[in-house]
Amino acid sequence: MPHPETWLKVLPAGLFCEPGGFFIDPLRPVDRAVITHGHSDHARAGHRAVLATADTLAVMRARLSEGGAGVSQQALGWHEQVTLGGVKIWLSPAGHVLGSAQVAMEYQGSRAVVSGDYKRTADPTCAGFEPVPCDVFVTEATFALPVFVHPPPAHEIAKLLDSVALFPERTHVVGCYALGKCQRVIALLRQAGWDQPIWLHGALVSMCEVYRQRGIDLGDLRPATVAAKASLIGAIVLAPPGAIADRWARRLEDPVVALASGWMRVRQRAKSRGVELPLVISDHADWAELNATLDDVGAPEVWVTHGREEALIHAAAQRGIRGRALRLLGYGDEDETEMVSDG
Image (cartoon, rainbow, N blue to C red):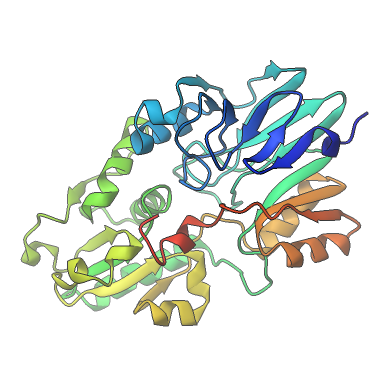
């Protein structure tokens, strides 16, 4: 049987399945694209034909407009199979954000799985990651260093609620990116018993509406941008990371600035952002989860698309797994890009 290396190629536009004639999360407009999820570094505008989950297509239409999501759009359900050029394709949950998928491909007896971005921790706003046994596993490595150990998200939400109880006269503003993290923080707050209104910066409203339309109940959400300052005392306000320390946040009542990100494990990052309450809540696998995933899929070979490639490849080699750094430019953690912009 042909090794996936012979039919899954790295081209300037991204990862290309040659016999199937399609790219996975291409970095530039192409004729045929399979998209793992709706974050802007994976779902770009301008493709002629797009295959993805129905949830991801809905996210892309909201972010990119109907035409920007692809002239032709094909939704694929979990584990539903299609064949292109002799390549059998199906999608399995990645657990990253709403609709996020791994792309599984079989060609002439060999199987490769492109995981996109993923996490292993349960998330009430998206389907959980499912390991898919394969010959080659293509993985991210955003948090692929031993220092990155994500605590249970309920623990971090408890920190936030404890602070709200301790400082009832202040407004808590939590930085979180618009797709995935915002809705997850809301759902975690609801699970923890916070049934009061959650206030949103205007940049977060539209994606929360997409989640509602896709069946994810987020409770009472209200626009913070037009709210009276006094009505936000003691409240929880969510905003893009780029807004939590600027003029917009300063209009709030003595704000407690928080940021929900895996990068909050690094104290210097929190300090440089002026974050008083760092919340280590990540939508990416941590070091232990990345390594456990390599064991779970059982692939003898792993390709790493972006992140801390060398550390993960070294850890894989110690267990007899061959590693390859693809070094695809253009991918990155949306958390990280929002440290300098509203990505």
